[in-house]
Image (cartoon, rainbow, N blue to C red; front, side, top):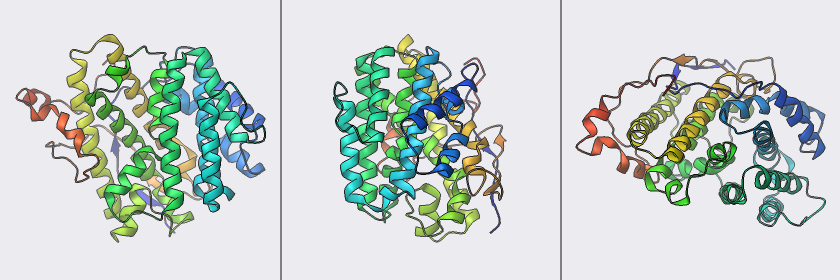
Length: 373
């Protein structure tokens, strides 16, 4: 099977990385081994090779301390290990009833971290450790926000275990928004920097749109870059990802699948930039920092996806290539502000500056952002 050919893809946000990022990889691997979050030696090697310390440094460049960045790196490898064991090809993924109960225990472990719920549940114990460290290094409010986001993660994964691939794209998009930690990871951006944003500001409709778009952009980018690996390893897969759903449900060829997926992604990215520019113009400091945390998450996550072996090679380590191309484009294509045809996501465009009289200026926004923005 030939590698999938990807076109250039744009990510016009400023690039940054937390200093001395390689040192976090060794500590993260040691933490993963301590809690035994792997099924065998090959799985351990694959997780270690993922470079979750480097990924966390890319996603959270404004982390307040090395200790908090390490928490983010450890959660990242936890999520990859959990995804492998419970959501993809692992033993628990074939036991939905047991998996659902296990996820319930994990969630309860971080809801009441004062006590050990099950001393034999390695994933729950590791997750509890993360909650306790967040509480100590950031605040219990930040920890509670993590707990709430994680609950949505488990809910979606339980749904996926109980049902085959959705028939409607609207359901596919809704599941992808929160699966794989899609909402948790952008939530961690403000926790890493110990941003004191209020609950009211964080849950405003415009900010929720920004956060959801940031989540979806990285989820869809990972779907696009992992498309070749999915075709090679799971040609008749569950079809929950963007490209797999389009390919299997609509019966499109590879080239057409990629074109449609990137078109959806670019429309969301263009809206993100317009709303970002509009909100930054008069935002309070905590809101500005929250938005820039989302920027760092999107740009850093894209950089890692674009350059990591987990997606580049069919076995996730080396050897046969899963895709070719996918280099960084200089700018997004022009966008006229038309919402994507997904009812569950279309509400984002209700906050598009183009819909207001002052939107003409926003419409002239260059689809590039200066490094100092």
